[in-house]
Image 1 (spheres, one colour):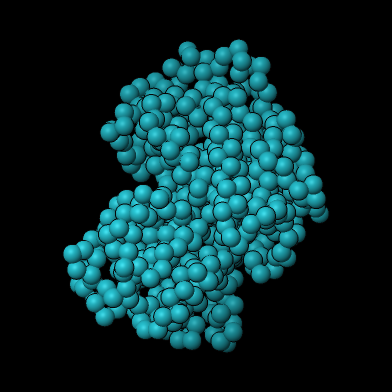
Image 2 (cartoon, one colour):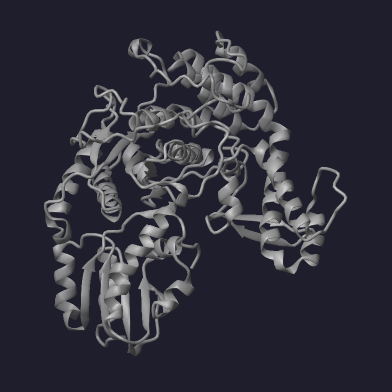
Length: 595
C-alpha cells in the first residue's frame, strides 16, 4: 500500500477501519484475505501500508473484479462500495462453489435493501458479518478530503446533464460519512447564489441525511449538534484562484509538471529515470509544500548543509548545491541515505520549477496578479485592464497561458462585451475551441456583460495590505476570507444562510489573519477544539487547500478541513470547462502546453 497513517484525516480513517473491520475480524482467529474494489483500494492505500495490514492478520490483498484462485480454508474480508456491480462480483465468489471458508462483508456506506436481500438470498449462509462503516470519502492529506469523483464536474455543470440530482445525492452521502467519521454533527450553511442554486440543493441534502444518519445510528441516537460548522460553496465563488499561476511549491509543481498519482519523475545524474511519491510520508514535502518557491530554493541547500555539517563533512560551498554534490554525500554518509534521497528529489523538483519560472512564468505573473488583484505591486489601481492584457497576447506564450490570462481579464471586469470577447477569441486563435472561455457561463460566472452584471457588485475582500507578500504572489484565494470570517463569526447571514442552526456557542475565537509566508507546523501542535469543514462543489485547487492549513495554524483552537469532489490543476479545470460543451459521449483531452 502507499502512504502512512500518521497525519490528521488519514490517521482518523485508519483508526476507524481498525475499530470496525479489523476489530470484528480479530474475534475469529487465523490469517485472512482482504478483497477490495477500486475505491476501497484507493482508500486503504491513502491511510495504511501493507505492513500495517499484515500486523492485523491480513496476509493477502486481492482485487474484487479479478479472477482469483479459490482458498477454501481461509476467511475473506470484503470491503467494498454498496453497488450492484460489487454485490454481483461478491455473489459470484460463492456460486456455484464458495472460494472461501466464510465472508466478512463491510460496505463503505448504506447498502440499499434490494442489494442486501440479493446477497442474503444467494449466499447468506456464508456471510458471518455484514456492516456499513460510513467511510465513502478519500482522505487526501491531513486536512483535505475528496469524493474521488472528477466526473461530478460534468454531471453537475453540463446544461444537458441527465444525472445531476443523482450525483448531488451521492456527494451528500459522502459528506455525511466524513462527518460521521469525525464524530461531528455540524450546523450547515451555504453560499447564497441566485444563478444556479446547486450549493443550496446540496446543503439541503446533507442536512436531511445528517438527521437521518444520527436517528438510525444506534451509537449516536439523540446526538445533538457538535461545535462544528459545515460550509458548502460552489466553484463559481472564486474562478480566479484555480486559473492563476500559483508560486507556492505544491501548487506550482502540480501546475507546471505532469504528475500522475502524486508521482514525480526525474532524472538522476547518470541519466536514469527515477520516481518519487510526493505525500505525507515525505517529511520534507510536508515542510516545504506550502512555502513560496523563493523560500524553497533557499531552504533546500541549507538542509543539505546541515546534514553535511552533522557528519563533519565540510564541503567547499559556493552557495549552490548540485545533484552531483548530493550524490557524493550519499556515498560518504550511509546512515543519512534516506534523508539525502529526499533532498535530492526536492532539489531536482525545485530546480525544474525555477527553470519554468525563469523561462516564462515570472513575466506572466505580474500581469496575472495585476488583473486578479485589480492593482499593481505599488497599490495603484489598474484603470485599463486591456493595457495589462495586451503585452501577454502579443508575446510568444503558449495558447493555454494566453487563455488563462484572458479569463483573468474577463473575471476582473465581471464580464466583457460580446464584441470584445470575439476579438479576444480570434487573437488567441481558439475560434473552434471558444468553449474554454464561453463555457464558464455554465458555472454561473459572468463572461458576457449584461445590465445585471454591471449592477452586481464583487464581494468585498479582507484588507491584507499589512501582510508580507511577494510582488508576484499578492492574490489571496477567496476561500481564505471565508474561512477567517467563519472562524471569527463574521459571515453575513444574508450571503451565508443557515440550512440548520449551528450551536450558539460556535466560535473559533482568537483568529488571526494567517500570513502568506507560511511556517510549517505539525498537526500534533494543534490543540483540539471546534472544526470548520468547507466543501467546494466542482473541484478544489492546491492554493485553496493551503489556506486550510494557514488558517488552522493562525488559529489553533479551530481546525479547518477542506474537501471537494476532486482536486484541480489549471489544465484539468480548463479541460473540464471545455468538455461542458460536448455531448455526453464526446471527450476532449488538453495536451501539455496547448489546448
